[in-house]
Image 1 (tube, rainbow, N blue to C red):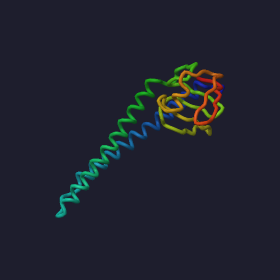
Image 2 (tube, rainbow, N blue to C red):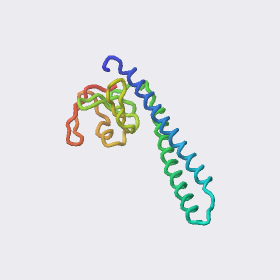
Image 3 (spheres, one colour):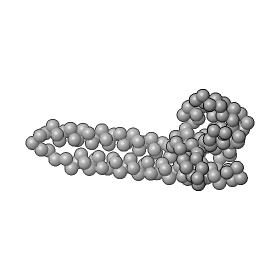
Image 4 (spheres, helix red, strand yellow):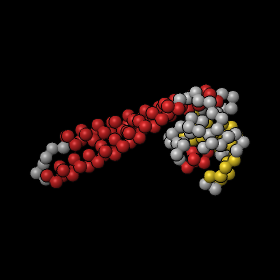
Length: 154
């Protein structure tokens, strides 16, 4: 990993983009399914059932529209960072190697396993992102009762 940090960041970037694209597609499919289900529900003699089903499908659509908006925002933020950014301190787009894990500060996608290694994609606004912000190689910090040593930042 240490030998090719730029190539690794590029692979992580593209992996994150694929994960976000999947979230977008899933949300779009769920929205379409909720709209179709609401439109297919016919009024029956039990009018309350019809209204309840339509209301539930409307709520489901709204929930998925929120998820879609979040995924699109995350994609736009990731694209604004890009994979080629060179960092010397922990900031959006940096890859921070600590003795407790490797953190990609490029959106809150969580745990990523890539090429047999575990990375954590975290947002700058996340608690660990806030703790890392502005730190440099060699710095130490505490988070959730653990002490972290920053080995390097790319």
